[in-house]
Every structure is written in C-alpha cells, then in structure tokens.
Image 1 (cartoon, rainbow, N blue to C red):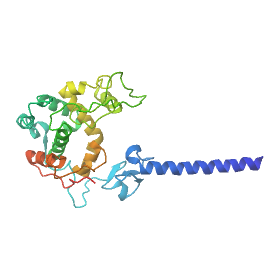
Image 2: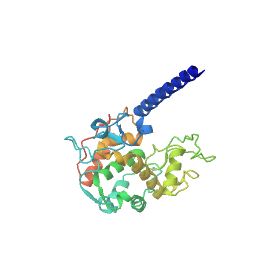
Image 3: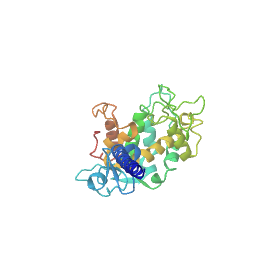
Length: 281
C-alpha cells in the first residue's frame, strides 16, 4: 500500500510539473492577451515571455520594459519631437478648419466641437501639460479614420456585440457596437470598463457616446490612453494594431484615405515630421 501511495504521489507531482510547463508555454505564446507570469519577465511584440534585451528591449510589449532613450538608429517614437499645450497645438481655428471638410450630409456634421475636444483631453493627466505634436497628429489620424472623416458618430452596421460577462453584463435591449471616434471599440466589456473609469453609465446607456460630443472624445481617449499610448515608442504603424487589432492585411500606405496618409497630413498641419515607423507588420 505504501509503495502504491508513493507511486501515485510521484505520478501526481510529475503531472503537476507538466501542467506548470504547459501553463507557462500558454502564457509565453499569448502574453499580449494574458501578460507574463511573475514580475521579471517581459512580453515581446511577438507574444513571447522572457528576460533580456530581446524581450525587454525596444520591442517590449509589456512588463519591466527597458526602452527609455532607445532608438537603434531609427526615429520611431510618436511621443518624441516638438511639444506644446494642447490649446496651442490644436487651436480653435485649426479644429474648425478640420471639421469644415465634413460634408453636410454626414450624421456627425457639427457634432464634434472644440469645447468638447479640449474638455475631454484635459480630463486626462497626460494632456494637462505639454503634449507631443506627433501624438496629437496620430490621434487625429485614427479619429478621422475611425469616424470616416468625422462623418459618423456610430457604426453603420448596428450589431448587438453582447458577450456573457459577470462583471459587465449587457443591459436588456442595448447594443454595444462602435460609436464615436474610434468605432473599433465594441462589446459590453469595453463599454463597462470605460464607464467605470470615466464615471459614466455607459453599460446601461451606450448611446450616450453618440449623444454627447464630450463623452465621445472621452470614450475614445480612455481607450487610447489604456491601449495605445504605452506603445507610442514603437512607431505609428505598430500602434495601429492597438486600435484595430493586430492584423495588417488591409494596410495600404498608398490609399488616399489610409491612416498613414492622414497621419502625414496631420503632422504637416502641426509643423512636425512624422516618425519613421509608418509600416504595419
């Protein structure tokens, strides 16, 4: 009996050891979604966990990244370059000039206002001081692309986008499709998390994003600060994955309305050169 117990104990220890290895491999290959176990490992942009320069260096996705001041000879940092107060970077005149190009038959014509933009931006600590003009150009490029040139305040395809969630359950009769400036933000979990952070009832009333221009800007900026801003050092092409997923299959730099062209145009408006990391891989 003692021998049988010893065998079973040995088998159980071996089984748990195998499970630990499998769990670590699972973490290591999906760390962009699950993060890395422990406090010393970094998640690389390729989704693997580890330590050292290959994981914690320039292409570190999360964890104790060691990226300060690193460029490897290339100017990829969207957070670098000339800076200024948000009111001086985007003046009322420049904002009105951008919005004047919105066609009269657009549902969002006149919806996105300068007052709402300034109030929303300055509600986030990162934009109360001086901001990088490149980042603002990148933000406006994504806002323009996400709302089809500031033409729409909600998705044309009104799907429900409701998933099972104990923390952020769907409200009866409500749908969680894309609204506002980044219409890639969908599903009840995002509306719930954004509402909690912003102190707004977005889970119960997702339409608030399409009714209030200030909320529309805050909703988009919450997502930008949470998902996109930490990766500004990787370049414009790479941060687009944080907005619209990691796929680059529809990436076309030559398209007239591509994000790259819009980013370059906004950089020109703000008097800065775009970064060199324009491609999406």
